[in-house]
Length: 428
Figure (cartoon, one colour):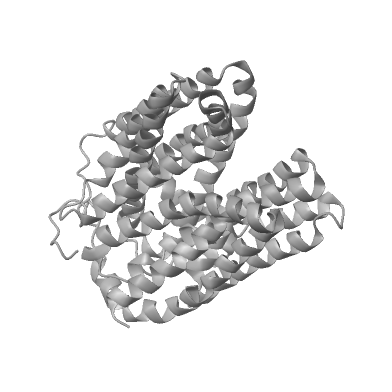
């Protein structure tokens, strides 16, 4: 299998898994409400499915880095997540709610495998010089999934009933299994490209990639090593913190979307359409970026993307139809490239022996930030919907401020060099 075919095979699996992931949350929420008639039960299922990712991400990443055949481990995680959804679907309304919530909590531990677990394997498939374009295409699968997943869940629920949405989400995740199982073979075919990409750090020291005699064998120590890498590698720490803070603001926007749709357009359902507009704009922006012969510097995109999102949130706070529609598009134009830039920084800075942990831990932290923002937005919305949106805009501005201040605190450090900082051929 050549590199182009390998990337298409990877993209198909990642798109299916991520669409199933995005669909599963909405479908589970609708199924919980339809079966039990309790909004509290439905929200508790969704919360359990997402909150446990903060624990599962770092642990799964450590296991992924330690595995000689990461594709099999990734496939096992997909199968485990799908099995959890099936158990919830079968037991919902037939057993105490606490049992279903516990199953959702266990399934959520594997959630980061559907996001960061895939992306961490991308450098195994393409040479380092082709990573910028492959990275943008990979980010597009996230944007497409965030657009198609919730819409598909609503459509299936309307046609075949809410539980059918959970079944379809499960089927999509299972469709990704062949691609995951193929990753070990693809990994061995691309290993020369990965090794060729290893390079000294800014001070000229050898790369951290490869086995280290000081690397502990215990899983707990491996997890700690991943966290230390995120904290100590300054460009990685800046990008991670900025993205997590930005996700707090994004969570606030998503939580307010139904209220915004009801107030401005007369129906909470129009809030979902606004979020679809965000996803379309993000997908379009990343498509344009992937076609550029010379990608934008990822540090710049991650730093100032939150300001673009903040501008959209300020427009949304006006409460008028045209500015609100423009706000959704502007938020998407900020979110899409920001995600691409974040992936680029992780690929550039992550030591290969910790790559899986850094991607899955980063995904877990972002999910946690998103959940925090959504949780805070509820009480604030009872006070003032424009106040929540203005607060979210302030959070986005804080994300950019943190990046800029932390970046220029040490002016003597030279920027990393890689395919994101030098011209690329049009074929890359």
